Length: 372
Ligand SMILES: [Zn+2]
Ligand SMILES: [Zn+2]
Image 1 (tube, rainbow, N blue to C red):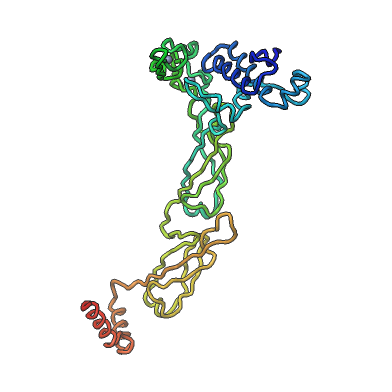
Image 2 (cartoon, rainbow, N blue to C red):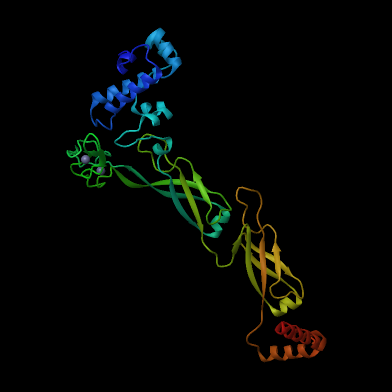
């Protein structure tokens, strides 16, 4: 294990600024993006990251100065071993350091997390009302088994781009004026596939439908979203998986119209039922119910069946069912019906029909409005 000061090539009295400068220089030279596949550069980069992590922290530096690496280990520090740790260890300092001429790389938690997925789920109104256990097919991707995720046809590999020597960018110009542009030969990747894998077309991953059991709670509506943590796309960089959102689409129903937690329906009744009153059967999502229609019910009258609507999502109880009455006038009458209705008309007398006064008021109002 080399001495941290030696790794960064600074004296034991170096100031924090000197240490930072030395590390920046070192990191620029050995960054893995600049030295793809170079194990030695990678190791120097890792060592430098560890040395900087210790020497830039006054507490750790004090322990190291007095007791060496052994002292650090006894205090619970185990160094930087995995490349992810190098990127994670520094946080803000890292962002500041990483202003590379060949592109900035920032690894945030958000970037490492797998993608979120949205799946639509169609439900009938009955299913939305009762809730449902469904098995969804989640369209995830997985590592291509043919190429093990490399994207390369088996037996072939990645070629370092000869145009940019793997840098991904090309510098043009002289010592006074330099312009860095993305390498067009490799699209800035620094390398390209010798021959892409036929099964994944070089993507390294293939689509796969993963079955997933989901419990839909009663009361969901169109546009409701169910959040399933961690069931999205897996991370490509060892981070946590994305989340899954199940978006509900509730189909329209031939009988019921939904308004919040209430269900609206229109029930036709005969004109004699409306006039005489009746006990009618009303369909609900929860089975047939009965409704007493009082005598003299008008067309368009509204009745409420309490608690016969949709269940309240994540709550207690139900909305109501609202019944709108449609009075049906018969289109055809038998001779007997016609006679009876004529009889009805005769015995009803003038008082039951709209009076002359009513028409007079209507006509007055109409004329007033026209004069205005
Ligand atoms: Zn493949
Ligand atoms: Zn290139």
